Image (cartoon, rainbow, N blue to C red; front, side, top):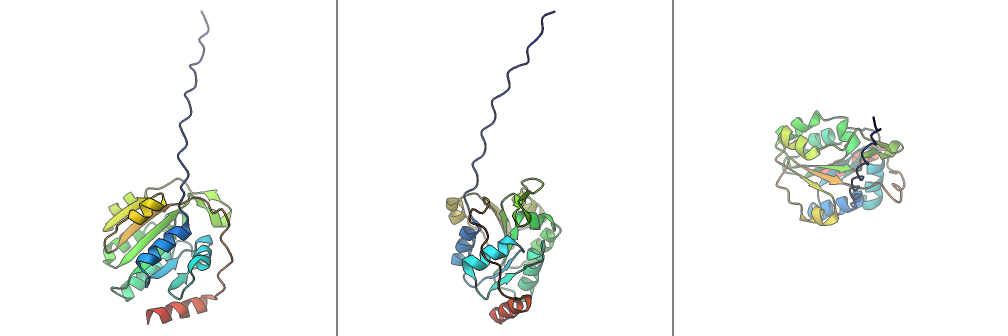
Length: 199
């Protein structure tokens, strides 16, 4: 009986283009649209990059509280109805606390939940997250008013979101220049600055 040769291997699928957005681009666009917004940023490189890109009293840097950007932002939004509040989350951070999604959705606040998704836990060494998650579908299923995914600068500029609670899922690449220097304020100073910006 003749030996059958294995079928030739299929050509590998073309790799998806790497995202070109950066967290700094996302923050710049958000602050252009919402210059007075209170912004709560998740811990690690996200807060460091925000601090270096656009430090201001309205920034609440969570220097050691992974998974808590959206809950803290929600608390501020509930305490200050009508004030725009941005939760600047990471993909790994939100995956730690998905239970916050229905709470945000039910709040009726002006909360803009931004998930900056580089597909990894970059602050702790670049370990990949479990998988690329569909945060738009998760937010819509939880009851957010709307959710949009953007992968480049043009999509970011074109994104239109109604009054919150809404979610912006921004796919970004790994940082090329590092996160910059650490936040220089103590936690107490951060709270004082934000408290002053709110009052």
